[in-house]
Image 1 (cartoon, rainbow, N blue to C red):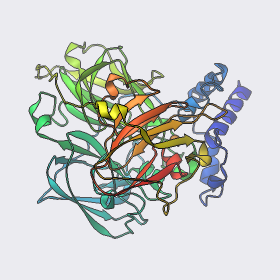
Image 2 (spheres, helix red, strand yellow; image 1 turned 180 degrees about the horizontal axis):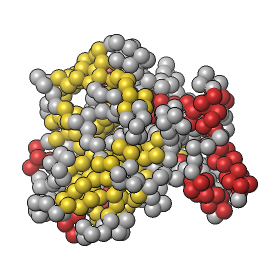
Image 3 (cartoon, rainbow, N blue to C red; image 1 turned 90 degrees about the horizontal axis):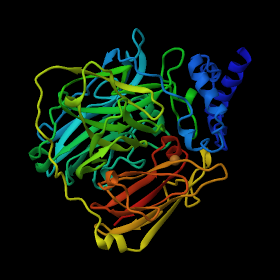
Image 4 (cartoon, helix red, strand yellow; image 1 turned 45 degrees about the vertical axis):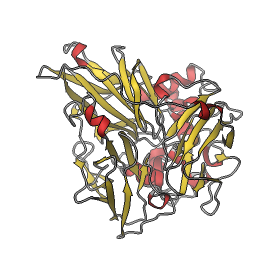
Length: 511
Ligand SMILES: [Cu+2]
């Protein structure tokens, strides 16, 4: 048994440290390669169960077939014990048109009895929900109170390039900068996080992530659960690996193909549960993880309804048994708890059956109204279906060898230009490698696009909505209708943050 465990732990070590990545030299050069790195390398903090999971993976011999596909998720998550009620981020709205957002550092008691060093917006960990309205003119007053440079990127927001917060728009420590814009897109759940070159993944890992809700006339008029913290909840999913000292030491756990952890935090809460009434509950899901994919299901196999994609409502509620979100993607769903027995344990689980979020159903006064059946009028036009492909992107490689069209990111190189207001068809091809390849969540800044086709076929119903991040599996070709409503330089990249960091990113200049 002991030798089996040793083999398992070596295997875990090999996967975590090297994975399939071709080069680990960068992490080896890291100045943080100190004792704490070494101690995390022996994975003494992994439980026997986790090691057995790894053994199981190997025994099933899916290492070749799924080795790459499951590369994102080689380490199982721990089940949520449900001992902590889910934290809810505070909502902030513009005051006299201004929203103050400060990136800061501090300590947070994530694990009981221990203070973990963390980053946050307007607080020590994570960020608020910024609630804004279509047609509103807003100033985001951003301040960097960290001791290192950062940027403020608004993921999914259609904003002029100079306010987008890409790697060009660095704020040095102590600097405040105003970002002015008019909200010019429909109701949606967006998010914000840093995007400085070389430090995006680490800053997000330490806690820099917040949400943006956009409301519009339609969203306020149609019948959907919209009482924040009552029947409308944000769920920000992030997996972390705590060190023995219960710290978030990014450099110690860094994996060039995507840093993952065994501990799930939802809205920063470890072992969360959510108390709900016997009614229809709206959940706004964000995969805010550096690299882990999640397939969300209910443990009783019940159907739920998806009502929104990254950038807005679907045309109608769409019945789903499960939803997969890759990093950066969002979905809004309605779960009807009025039909569920409050005596049985209902929980949100993932593809491996791990309990992510147990629900506690309470008998309390609850709304019984039906939800709206017509939510939006999204559609891919005939013209968009027949437009020729004018931009081709080939995603390829692993680890530090990732590339787009054979190149790695260069801040001084513009890869594409596009005219403001023009719709172009972008074709994204994920070229497999000898090992198969891995899924890349492809994100474009400053726009909401339409998926025209996936491998030549119409996308499924639940992807017929505005998107800013699309999962592209190895071997897949995805066609997107892309239009920028503003001018400027925008990034496009893989949203596995380590891939982005390693150069799987390019720039489009909109003129
Ligand atoms: Cu990638």
